[in-house]
Length: 308
Length: 308
Image 1 (cartoon, rainbow over the protein chains, first blue to last red):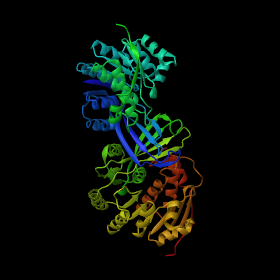
Image 2: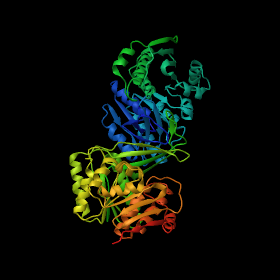
Image 3: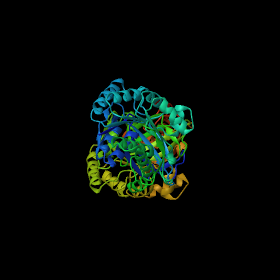
C-alpha cells in the first residue's frame, strides 16, 4: 500500500450562499461536508487510480468522529488515524453564486507529547507494509517544527521512498533530511530558495538535500529536476474551475508513477493530467476521469535524460 | 418545571477573525461552540433565575450529539430533545476585531412525519408536569406551518399557560389559536398586523386571538396589552453590546414572572432588565447579574390597570 500522512486533518465544510456580505445575516442554501487535509485528498486519488492507500495522522473530538465515519465509506482507503484528546479542526469554504470561495480555517488541535510519540510509533509500524509514503500539509500546534525531518529519516531507514509536500520552515527542515521527492509550488519554492526563477530555484532545492524536486507551476504544469534528467510538462490547454486539490492530485500522480516504476515523462504526464482533471471536478480528492484520460495523451513533456 | 420548545435547535459556533474579506482565506483565531436556539437561551436564563427548565425539540446527527453533550453540563436544565435521523444545524457567527458579526445559518434538518408525531406525543407527556410552556423560534422543514397552533391547543387543553415567540406565518396561525401570551418584536408585529404604530399593532394582535401581547421595542423596552391593563416599561439607560438573545431573556423574564404570579409591572421590569443585562453579556442565554439587579430597580413602568 501507499501511506499518506496528514498531521493536520480537517473536516472540509462547504456553505453555499447567494452573496457573502460582511456584517449581514446569510441563509446557507446547501451544506456539504467531507474528510479533508492534503494527504486524504492524495489517498482518494490514489484509490481512484486503483492503488491501496492507508491514511494516518490525528483525529479527535466530535469532528474527528464525523471525519472517520465519512472515511469508512471510501473504498481502497484504510483509516489508520491516531486518536487524540483534542478536536479535529473544520475548514469552512463559503461559496457564492459566482463560485468564488471565502475560506475560514479553524486552528488545529494541540497535540500532546504523548500523542506525538504514539503517532511516531504507529508510523514506523505502517512503513513496514508501505511501498511509498507522502508527508502532506501543515503541522498542528504541539508537533515540533522539525517533525517532517524525523519522519523522513525514519522512512529512509525503512527503505521506503518518501515524498514531502509542505511549506515554510517544516519544508526547509524536511528538505535538509534528504527526502526522495519534494513537490513545492512556485511560492513555496521561492520562500525556500529566495529565487523567483523556477528552474534556478528547483536546482537550488536539490542542492539543499531533496533527491528530486518537482515544482508545480499551476496552469503552466510541472518542472522536474531529478538524478535521471530534467523535464518540463505542460497541459495541452488551460482549464477553468476550482484549483483546490490540484496539487494533491499531482502528488498522487507522482507517487503512483513511482511505485509503478513509470519513466519520468510518463509520471509527469500523469501528474499534470490529474491536476487539470481535478480543477474540473467539484472537490479536492476527485477528478474528471474522462478529461484525465483525454489529457494524459496530450501533455507535452520536453527535457532530457542525464547521460548514464 | 417550565417547558421550552425549540423545534429548530442549533449548535451556535463563533469564529473570531481579524477582518472578514470576501474571497480571501482567513485564519480563525478562536472557536467557541454552544447549544443554541431561542428556547435553549430562554431555559438557561430561567435556570439562572432559579427555575427548573426542561427543553424539548429535535436533535440528531453528529451536531445534535455535540449539542446534547454540552447541554448535559447545564444545571437546572433537563434535556428532553426528541431524536431525529437528520442532523441538527449549526449557525456560524464570524466576529471581527471590531466585534461586528457576519452570520451564516445552515438550514434545519428535514423532520419526517413519524418524528413530528413522536415529538407531539413527548410534548403532551411533558405538559403534565409543566407550570408554563414557551414555543420559540422558526420551524424546520417538514414541520407543518400550523404546528404552533396545534401545540397551543394542546397546552390549553392541559391547562398550561403558553407563550409564543415566533414570526411570519407560524406566528399568524399561532395567534389565531389563542395563546396566553405572544412576544413579537416591532418588525414581527408590523408583519402580523400591517401597522407600524406599536400601540395600535399590539391592540390589533390581541384582537386576532392572543390573550396578552408584549411587544419588544429593542432599546425602547416593552409595550404590554393584557386583560388586566396596559403598560409601557423602559430601561433607565441605553446599553451597548450584543443584542443577540435579548428577546429570549425577555421571554424568560415574562415566564418566570407568570409562574411566580408577579403583578404585571414587576414582570415587565424583570423582562426589561434581563434584556438589557443580556446585551452586556458575551452570549445569548447569559446576562450580567450585577447589571440586572441594578436595572430591575430602575425600570420605569407607566400604564394603567383595567377597572375590575
